[in-house]
Amino acid sequence: MDERRRRFEAQALPHIDAAYNLARWLARSRPDADDIVQEAMLRAFRGFDGFRGDDMKAWLLTIVRNCWYTWASDARRRAHTQLPSSDGAGGEETLPTNEAGPEDIVISNDEGRKLNDVILQLPSELREVLIMRELEDLSYRDIAQITGSPIGTVMSRLSRARALVKSTWIERTERSVRHGSS
Image (tube, rainbow, N blue to C red; front, top):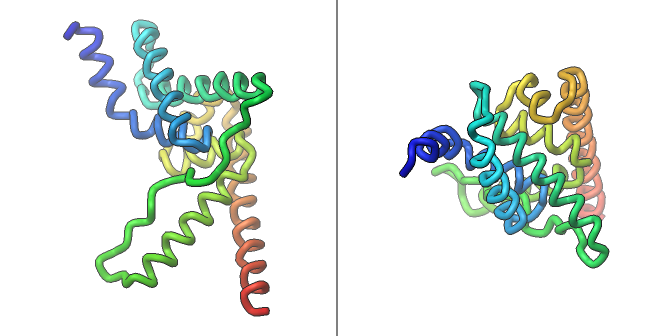
């Protein structure tokens, strides 16, 4: 294995889960996320000699985001192709604790799916900052760098995303209580 490839793998591969997670949330489809991450890793490897930073994760997630935008714009251009639906997207099952019974596990998994659905309904510019901040634990500075937006815009989008998730969650919960009790 050549030195360049070894350095790339040592620096990039620890962040492949974060890359896949972002791609999955943006694309809303596991197979499409696989394709996006594969393309992003190829682009990252090709451009690795030009990497001049100290934050490989932010650089790689920028490439994933750009690959997703390319993929989404290509999908829109093809009239017969629709953006993937949210069925089955969003993720990992909530892991039960050792003390959770079957009923607790079902409730927890159901709530996790409902939360994923709420997040999937967010506009992409809000969804991406929410995922990068809350799931990938990136700083505002890193998110601003990845999205090419000022930090104030990142903070504003994150605030709007959190508020929309909260209001949608409350609305859906109230609706389900009303329908469940009638």
